[in-house]
Amino acid sequence: MSSLPPILARWSAGAALLFAAAGAAVAQQEAPVTLTLVATQGPLQSADLDAALAALQGRPLDEALQAEAEALVRDYYDWQEWREVQVSALRSEAAPGELQLQVAAQPPLPPPEPPAALADPEPPKKRAKKREAPILATDYDSWLRSPARVLVDADQRRLWLKRGKQIVSYTVAVGTENTPTPPGIYRVEQIAHRPTWYPTATIRRDHAARGIKLPTSVPPGAGNPLGAWFVRLQDSIGIHGTNEPASIGQASSYGCVRMHERDLEELARTLRPGDRVLVIGEPAPVPAQGQQVSLRDTGDTHP
Image (cartoon, rainbow, N blue to C red; front, top):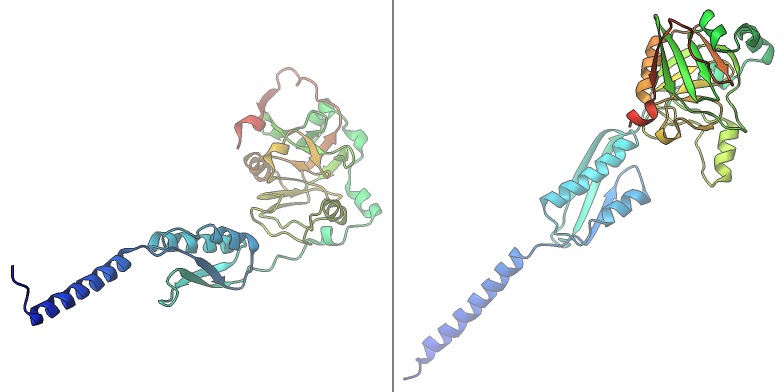
């Protein structure tokens, strides 16, 4: 076979080089870009958020991964109760594996001022005028005959509510041995929805001893241990929800009474300011004959 003419040989070699270069470019274009760095620019700085974003590195940087990174940032700002959160993604041709997330958001609303009764406790004499003498009702039978709407049995970890002709009972958490729920007769002073928590100096000191620094106030939300409702009684104690449902049925509070959220909502919507609450430390006996009783052992049925 005769060899190719010189001009055809040169054309064949050039075409081969062009095809090879084109093939390499196509292969490079089709190869997925791997996420090597993701960073945020916004008003909040969080090591937890940075760690969550860093866990995305090493995956193909496509639209789904970009949307996932944006959702992580948006959820974190929402959890911190920032408003009108906008997340935009920026990518550079010079660094195709890097993803920059810019955040624009409005800061959370400031917490409301603490109620006057909590910010500036009343002197003991003034509180004593509002409290009923415990001797007026000291057990279940005397509570039934009294105008009190609620009975809290600290020993049984139960709360009893008069609702029309029916008595409803809920499982609750009460104070510990060192911080017991004080027995006595109280009046409901306020029923608040989505309350702000103001940790006392004792609570902040106890948490600090465990290496936990508490703020002076905690706004409504997932991190608020009061839950969605707070029934404030006298002497800075109350009946509220909890973000630790496993504590229900235990002696685990600083003196307040904790309830499951759904139970507490029923209670809060039934009571009115001025209603009386009796707290005792003895088991409640069997109800009187003819008394309708509905027991709700919520510790197992509620999440």
